[in-house]
Image: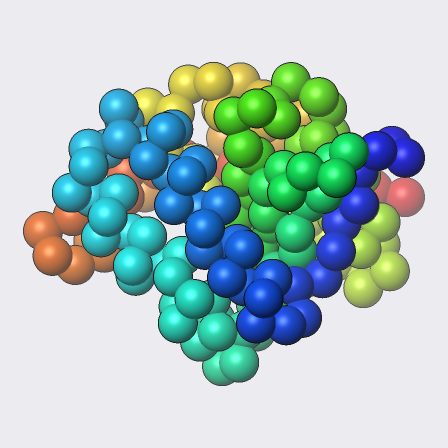
Length: 168
């Protein structure tokens, strides 16, 4: 897709852009699913500039900004594990949804996995995030199990684990 650029977030400005995007996307998309208090808590814990820096510097994460037709359309966070790629974050701004950005990001990640010799992509998705679950299923991901994770402050993530096998 010539209209989409996947740009490594390798400087402070891009991390600030990701944190700002996260704030917009999470309030719009997740408040109806998990509530305002949990959104605020998770933004600070996982999507703030400090959290993004920590994840990159000490936890092995990589972040990418998605630029669609000159718009900051979304972002991706990944972490390479033993034989898999953990797709920690793939968020698309509301005004850019429905433009096959996720499909093209998946193609990029599949190529990355093949280059790195990884056998699957896996992710977590909130059980009540019905539209997003449908997108992942459409892209070829399968639900393999569910988990409830205590994230502190009285909050949990009630998720499905989805996997996408990498084939030759």
